[in-house]
Image 1 (tube, rainbow, N blue to C red):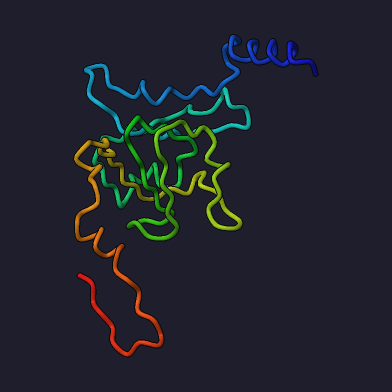
Image 2 (image 1 turned 90 degrees about the horizontal axis):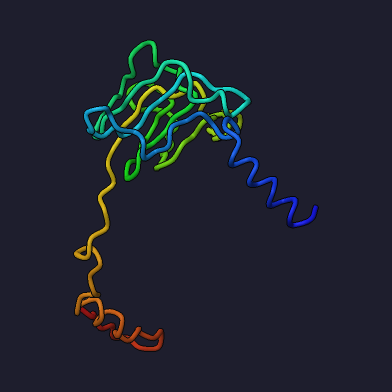
Length: 169
């Protein structure tokens, strides 16, 4: 295929509505009053991406800890969207037991595409969850190595032939 054809195909896919999944963008996960939503779970998935992220939805606020999902949401989520600077940890069994997986910022229209062990996937198997806001990286977190760390790196290693070992602190 010529580069021009590939470019035209890519432009057509971007311009035609319904080509991408119907999932909202992660940045759009806000309530009408402007408060933040950490994630949204959806109970409808489909082999066609434009039909994903449909059906009933469960909004999860930042800091939500649900070791036991509501009965109608236990093993029902098949799509999810995670807001910016958020991370959702899910478990396959109630009470935060079983297999676990972390989803960071992004849209996940088909949880069938995420493996859970050798034979399973994450569609319709989420029974517990925890949603947290990731702290932004600040200059205080980027520290220079401490003087003690420099001393440890310059400490000579003992040899097998010596009987005395020095301790570098």
